[in-house]
Length: 246
Image (cartoon, rainbow, N blue to C red; front, top):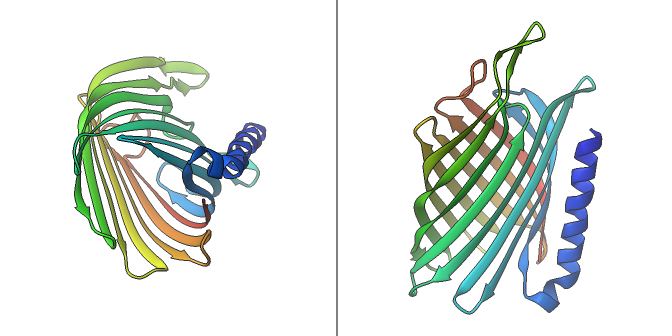
C-alpha cells in the first residue's frame, strides 16, 4: 500500500505540473481517477490513476502515458500494477507516419516482475473525419520479460528468468463522436513474440460534463497466449473514471 501511495503521489505531482504548464508548453492530454472490478489472475476491486500527454511540433508528435492500479481484499494486497510508455511520431504525408515506441510495465499478479518493449514502425490514419477517426500502426521491436520464480514450500521450483525476444507490435485506435458530448472509443494492441503473445482491447464510452470534465465507462480484456505456470491466460477489468482534459 505504501509503494502505491508513493506512486500515486508522484503521478499526481506530474499531473498537476502538466496542468499548470499546459498553456506555456503546448502539451495537451488528460488525467483520470478510476475505480473498477478486475477478474482473472486477481478477483478484486481496485482504484487507479492515469495520465496521458501529447504535443505536436511541426511534423513531430510526442506522447506519453502513465498509470497505476492498486487493490486489496480484507487488507491483503491483491493488485499492484505500474505502467509507463513514450512514443514519437514523425509525419511522412497527410496519412502515413513513422513512429518509435517504448513501454515498461510492472504487475505483481501476472507472474512477471516486469515487461518492456522497444520498437519502431509505420502508422496510417485510415479515417480522419471530425466525427470518426481510426489510426493503425505496426512494426518490429525487442521485448524483455522478467519472469518471477515459482516458489513451492519455500523453494524455487522454477527459477527467475529474463527473456529477450524479437517482437512485432500492432495497434489500432478508433473513436467515434455521436455528438459533442458522447464518444465511443476502442483501443487494440497485439505484442507478438515466439514465447508468448499479449493481446489487449479497451472499449470505452466517454461523456462530457463540461469542457474539461468527463465521465468514462470502460471494459478491458488482456490475454496472454502462454502465461507462466499457475497463472490465467485472460484478465478483464471494468472501470468507471472521472476524467479531466486539458
